[in-house]
Length: 293
Figure 1: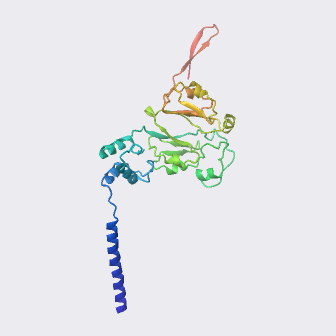
Figure 2: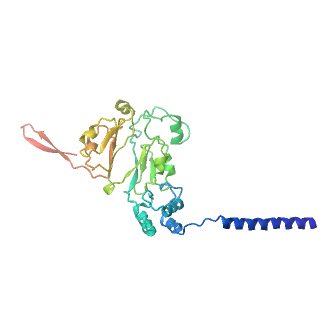
Figure 3: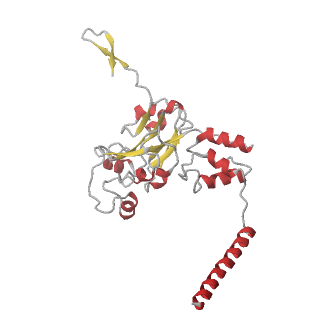
């Protein structure tokens, strides 16, 4: 009985001693957190999406408090208003950025790209991309396995079963960039939302020569340069056989959209075009205008 009592006493003594040691160690090495961090974190949206480049909102708050210059820090979910509120609270200058949205730069739907084989592996774009080029002749386009939809925390991107392509809901998209990072093909890009959410972009990233691209996809960019020649604002350039539109220079004139022979250039939220009047002659030789839809 005495042996059991002594054993218990020794264990209790060791526990008490260890607690005292841990208490003083914690006191000695305690890191005092800046009291501004907690209220700053509360002003952030709390999405913890990583779109700011940090592991979460707490890490972002720490960076905002500790850095005198926060011009390189930006919360895509909260946007400019949130950053301005935080900057006013901290007495710093907030970075100004135009709202962005995720854009799928691939228009190769089932009807535009012929399937030449079937992938029977894991239902993952990353896995498929690491093994081979894809199920169609286009080795650049969307693989259609939906990795982008799985990483979106805001339900802003979904797969269209009819086209096999992801579609972005611009009202839900926060431009966190998770889908951009998830796409192994680099098909998804963050672009400026534009005035009245109007955008024009080249929905193709195929860098193959025109003939190869044409064979692989009926709506791929063939690098014909027609869009470049018709753009009066020098907003379009063709590099590596594919065109790209600079959103900061584009004035939404839509001449490139009409000029593109494959329909690779897409327009979003722009009003319908006015009917074009063409001139024709009747049997008497009198010219008359005909409305075309």
